[in-house]
Length: 457
Image (tube, rainbow, N blue to C red; front, side, top):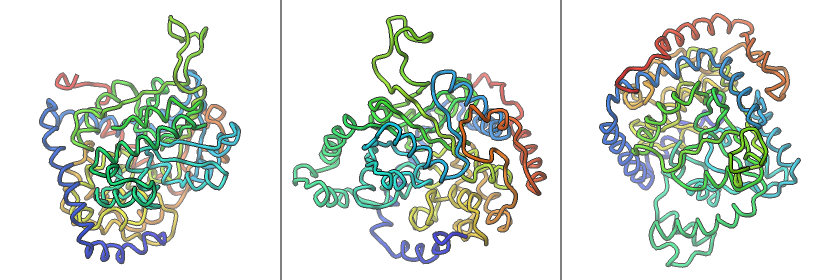
């Protein structure tokens, strides 16, 4: 158990006694929960779409090593550089080396949970690179030296009055500049525009990456994601290995559910699909009119394991189906009272209560799976029907400490150089039997992948 998890009960007690936090949480989660229900009614055969989305995720995770290799090969064919990071330290080292190789002094960054997980901002700062968060919520978190408390809404624990006071203190804002949300948003936009134009490197996460084409899909409701990935000359996407989907058609299925489940929208405002760097004049795949004037000269994709392969070898492998929509947080009666900071990790709520202990190498059971009323609301809200109840009931030794290791590679290296090893992944030691059971279960759930119901074509 990590020290952060060990303090869960004390943090939860403090959160329950904070009426300011409670009011902010209930207002925001109630709005998102109601929005999700309303907009799902606009999706024809929504239950069939959810069932098929689950088949896609089950099939992909059961054959993850195959799709990792396929994605790496496709991305590098389109000019991207793909890097393999077994641990958080490897991932931060790779990004720091890319920044140093370009003499980067300023990096702009769009919202990414996996970069929070690996503490990338701290590593870049230690290397002399100034990092500016450009998602409005993350920008506010950074100004306040705070931490995100929700997967989708980083500042769900703050009110607009909190933000106004922060902008006065940190940005010297006038009363007019904090007179309502539109005025504060305009102030943040003016402040960040200068950073976009000066940045040496742009860093993003990815909602999904597509094995078929080597593409990176970034979904946002703000223009910052597109500016981060196109204005700087170098774009680095940091991606958890479970974010892979096999085809563009599969991506379309999951996108129908992502925004509906996350924010109650039919589709997010910006859905960017990035396939390699910009094409130069004369390139085989350049537009007929010539090269592409916009976009980065280099695209680097860092595939991060950091315990995910260990989860795949555990009884909690189903949590890797998660598409990070945050719907389970919005309906969880525990999260809606205590908020995200009480969990102590990067991923709060029901998903974090399973993912964080399963990824954690520390000894001893974690208290996080007990942060549940076992009501099943998370399972009902999940767009891919992850069974939170079943995961919470897993034996604590299996969740808190999982032996064995995956032989992805002995040292960090370019995926291009280790594709054959990725295809030949094996489980070492006693995890082998667990992986066989998990793969058989997921393959069974993925049976029927590749067939489409006429209702969701």
